[in-house]
Image 1 (cartoon, rainbow, N blue to C red):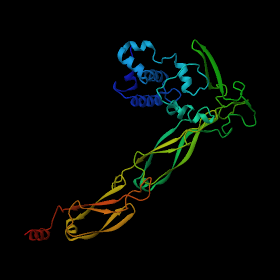
Image 2: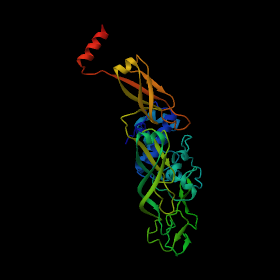
Image 3: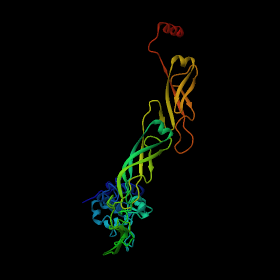
Image 4: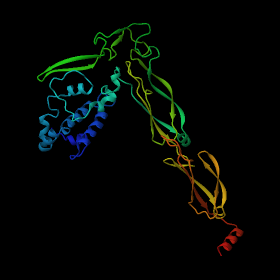
Length: 366
């Protein structure tokens, strides 16, 4: 059946090499089967499309022959899905004379964050990391302006307090895994018509730990983690804006079988304040004055982020006049100093006048 590889990657037919790589990188992150919510069938399709479009020669043939090109084999060079997944999961060892062509795209850049090669997390010797946690963090307007410490309570996976994460019942023995000899990985060799293929995978007997508990912990059933409530303090810096996401490394769910902790992501949700309106690091406040104060001048009280101040309004001030208060705005998030505050004057015109007021105004108008 014909496949539209451009549609699979979500790109136009005139897409550049960099656009193709970027599309593959994004979709690979999203659908990788080793990642929560991944889709192996979709990931396989994405990789197949990139194997063709990421190679100038194959792309040219595909553009020329269209629906018949998929019969030539999208991977090329004898590479099949199992081989690719071993490569993508960081399986070491020799691959004979087979050349995995990814068009100069470093798989470590794509999968290192969640598979364990190219500096990824699992390269530290753990089988997997716990899932990240995402929450919304509501803040009052001034809390976002000046910063605040917020405590949140989460129901999350934590290291088992009984076995402290080592998965063994306290007082029982932990032995070297016989299946992998303590390496945490096992190596397999497959014979194909292209030669010997060697791949290294995580040991399923010990989940990559290299050791096994003779008696699993009765609290966590040998998982090393349990679910419970945990109070976490979040330090919100001054100057954060609505929609800002704060990352707290290692404060997410603990990983089972000795895996590390995921991260906590808190997205800031700033409540509106009827008194102030924020524009970047500047703040605007509207202040109503009478038309007499505007005409004759006056001293008025204005509420700022730092409290109430006295502001001198000169005579003859027009509606909409703005007064700038330097350094009274929002602190800069990544540098010192603050933005400015602008006081915008609204001149109120009385809806009802006494006879004397009306007469005086008419005399003034004459």
